[in-house]
Length: 287
Image 1: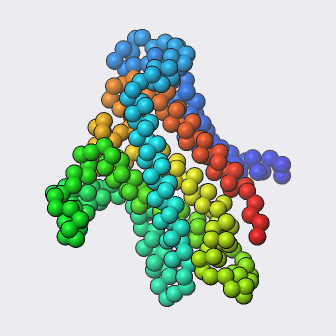
Image 2: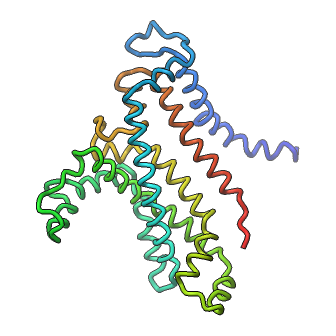
């Protein structure tokens, strides 16, 4: 009975994971190997990897993949810099440290679609806050159409995803900073090291595993961004990524076979970062 107890306790979670994770993953893969269009329900048949070949030959897929990679690169860079700076700021002991920490978590707590709607008002060309600010300080004399240009739209999406991703990565970096031995800093100060030297040679090298966890989580969020793009520009071709391409193929064009193939390609792309995430978690840090 004692040997069976752990499995009995794990059984409910294993059933939930099987029903909500493993079964959909296997079902999606089986759909991707079939010609399955709801516009032709009587013509469902096995076609092997033809859907994947068709997707990889599609210019729409490569366009959406290019958008995805651009968003990914911008989000990782913006989030990493902002999160490290914010974590150092939150590490300062003061009477309002708890309040500042609570405020910093707010963007992470808000639903992604709500974040997108809030930022849509900021980027609005007519009455948006950003254009008003830029015109007030005389950076530009005309309102900028942030959401009408592909590159500006991708930049706007990256900023919104960064806004949502920074709190988590900052908390991870803050936890890592709190875990660093203070004896290292005391020894560095005794040796006459400046604050910049301490940050460069002690803090950053020892924070790298924590930064790696944050970057991996941020990368997965950037690949799977959906709500923010829909909130900012809808589902037009201008700023669509591979997740929106999968949604449109599946639910607008009713091609479940090809849509499932795109979904699986998204899954494989995210899995690359997932493997890196697990390896980062298991990495030992030596002080």
